[in-house]
Amino acid sequence: AVKAVFSDAADRTLYAVDRGGAVSVWELRERPDADQEAAAATAAELEAAGEAGRGEDRLGQWWELRERHYLDKGHARVTSAVMHAPSRLLVVGFSSGVFALYEMPSCNEIHTLSVSDGRIDATAVS
Image 1: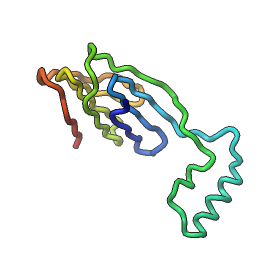
Image 2: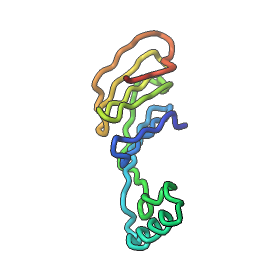
Image 3: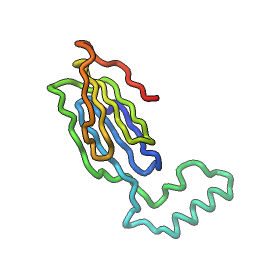
Image 4: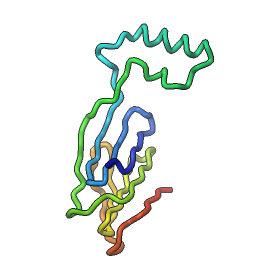
């Protein structure tokens, strides 16, 4: 089950964290079969009709799975996660009382700290 989803600062990459510890990295791509001129015309029609803001800027694009990473903390489940998009840092709390800091999009582990024997129910970044 997906625990949290975050986007990067440019809204072109999504990071989905599931409770089993998998981090899926999704990237917004141009559809190879999309008619870009038709997509632009449809977006312009919606904007002219006052119906803009419903995702028309994403016409002719789709989300593609770029890579998947696995956070292995000895059978511990992910209990919380938060991402600081400007610095591309992901903080993940586990059921074992451990939290870890990852640099995205490579999912490089920067730091791990065990703060208790109980689960980490909330994480926050300021």
